[in-house]
Length: 602
Image 1 (tube, one colour):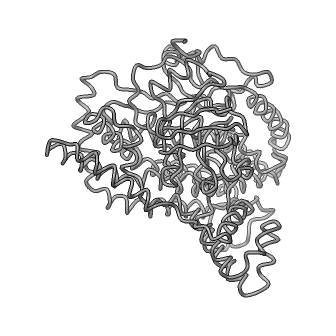
Image 2 (cartoon, rainbow, N blue to C red; image 1 turned 90 degrees about the horizontal axis):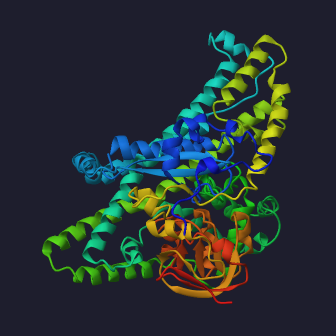
Image 3 (spheres, helix red, strand yellow; image 1 turned 30 degrees about the vertical axis):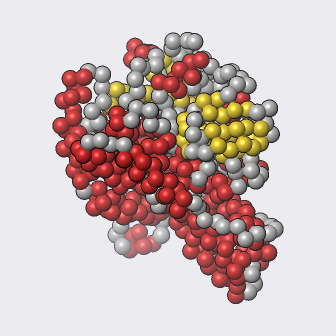
């Protein structure tokens, strides 16, 4: 077994990707100037959010996310054992490095600050959280309000008669700056509570381990299960629409055709129009739901690809016709939760420990819904709007001859966009040809070639020197990076052998594997199969009613796959590292969500 991962400075780009570094911000690529620090740090590939090559503008979202996460750890709440999470991009893939506080004296000195700052939020959680959603919805409304229009041949007369004193070119540039500002604001809001949510759960987790060293991680996770979260609402809307279609007698019209064809046919009578009205009411905001992680502009959004939710509705209609229940097993999950809590609490000897247990469990349950709810409002709804607005801006530059398609804009760094806009503004204002119309088409083709070359590279799971202990809450609970998983990565893939991961959701299931690499493959899943994927997205929840279990390469016990499987009563093993490499579709598997093991039976 190796004792460290490859150095980032040993990595070479794949053929055809030379010069890729220039497509990203200079501060997020490995560099000679910081080689001593970067070569001695531990960097893991973020397969939870960005499992594929990320295009230059999309990296904006990643950079904003990590800077916001880090500032709350380091500057807002002063998390005692952890600073921020650093970010680097290598050959188009995102790597993260948790930055620990190593000096025990400094950790001790940070505790009073953390208790005061985090204590205020924990003590006023409901009031502060109630104010959070209106804030986020207000930012989304501001994003929706942004409009990118082509530069006009002439300014309208009202610009003069109203004495506005400004023009369309300036407004175009201002609107882009406003979009960036609101995107960063969105991510600041994202982490207002999330770090504390993980910290509270991790604190409860550590307390339980102190009381009962042999308690399974999953037993602790189940103690906070069975709580309603908005992230499941899109799936609930699909179920309601399926049920309504059968009740109205229009379900047969949903069976065949594209969404456009189906909706046109439904508009022909009152029952069909009633169903369409329910669909229209549900889709805003709940179908602002990405088929992927939400971090890629190329992830398909339900609202813009209505065949996706229609496909899920068809599956649910078939279940309703067979008389099957569409309800999640919420009562069973809650009953199991209460049973486990009662059994372990009974084992506590000290009244003081019992009171502490009650307090920490209560806090974990209070903060837990936010850990999932934020995901819909930020990564899905807000991001959907951001991608739509950027495409509008791309269309403006298509009209100017800079691009051949709107999505070309995502091949620019965020700070290159104002330069391109100023070029278009300059040419429009003066009445001359722009340079961009001659410069960008060839440059875009070059960048597309680089992106395609980068996609052929196989990124290592980590780089650099593994730490003795990992303390940053997100790294452990969300990404599933622990001392054990690092050892597993260093040991390499034991192809064909059993796999070990996180015991993420209880139960044991056997069935044939269905290995899929992205959302495009979920339509292939058959009843009773075991989903094997690099990761799952929240929008995959509608297929959890037909599969037997879930296995993922990445993710910890508080990853979305783990949480969703617990709420749907499905066995799950996450963070196996090599499942999609070692398992082939059709192989029989036994997934033991109690032990965190996956056995290949044939």
